[in-house]
Image (cartoon, rainbow, N blue to C red; front, top):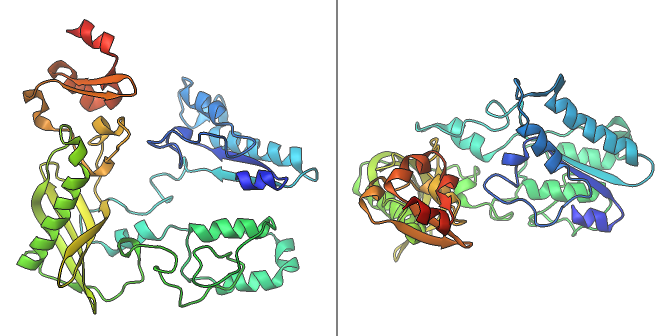
Length: 359
């Protein structure tokens, strides 16, 4: 949003759940504020207050507080200065309709599609439609065409009259008020095969065949390579059971889509593997499609965050104390700390001085 500030706009960024928002969940947020008004600390203070109802502050609903902040911003700058507001509100809808069915071990086309095609709606004021009929016609024509969040960004630039690149169907970012080609492909806008829903010719395979097992074991080998730098904390995974396997035959080679369960963490994964006459490879696009819960917590604090791929080693209490330096801190896992560590990884972060006292 900084670019709007440079062009005389004032801005506000509202997030109803800043502790696990779009830019703060397992991340540190912004080094510099992206908007002129960013009431994150105020909202964090609201969330930390002791209250009987998490959806209210006193007798006021939290969503009402957020909307009041938005309206105050609009009233303050209306007719005085160009302004733009970005508001993330998910508390009332989280777990119901802000995303689809993500966690499902079964081979479900619903889960596959909903994970990759989020719902997006637009409300256009009547005066905008009347004054921009050509744009509105383009907008309606773009329904059911391939678009991405990059197009939303260019649409905002279009609405605020900021300079944009010339529209072309191969460009990654096109305003929704410009014409988008029906021949636009995932490759044109940088969507990998793993997340592309345009691929239609998948052929179901016998998941227990040698071919499927070889491809799946290569996928698991890729997972183990990702966690190799944190091997003291991450278990080596192996194949527990196949779920499904599909193949797409192409002139340059075959593409496989496999779903499987690993041992010992019982994780359910789905990925794409590429094979030609000379090699087999992965692009590290791997989805974990079951609820992984607290498994990644003991590495999430280190910054590497292999996240969905790992589980804290169960046999860690059989090893010697593990000491890893990170930002002048020593992470020490000891037998008497394991239970607490499993509940919450930050309890494993203790200073060297505190660690010596525990000895």
